[in-house]
Image (tube, rainbow, N blue to C red; front, side, top):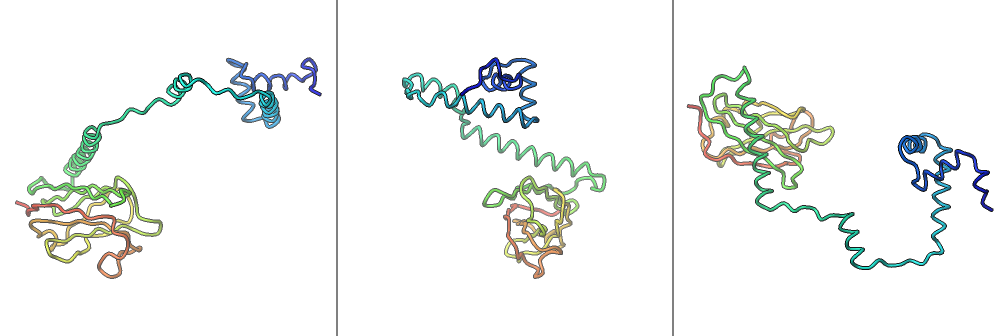
Length: 232
């Protein structure tokens, strides 16, 4: 038999009012705090919830009119605004160009880099799965490449290694990328002398780099930079 309301402890009544959603203001905030920190109060709220839920068991379900249901669903789950293909393409291109420009500006402001005499080349390396992205800037003044990861990383216990090749030439290591989001590497003389298409790639390798002189782990992707010229 249910205990008369007048005989219920004040704390239990408060829990019931909270379960029914009758509290407001400071009382509501205090009850929310207590339900999160006071196990006894939280248990009382749960008992009231179960009791109130059981009161509806004998009620027969009534389906809402289609217009009412449609209006409710539209209010609760408004359709997401669709972004047009060209708008999405423009946003992606703008973000990529902005990142490339920022990389070039940061590199040119580095005091260890002499005044620009040769061209700069920028490219983005993206894995086929889209889980790894690298922005690359090749500076022909210093024959260096600056790479910045914008997505992905080497698996735990592995490092990244950068590779490059010229047209019809075998791939060769440019250097290791053991940690950090950005790395600056000097191009080997053979790669620095490439004219035409320069291909860059990144793979994951064991600590210390590939033991074979060629990629042994996953190759995240390759990017070809066309029309590369030497420094003026």
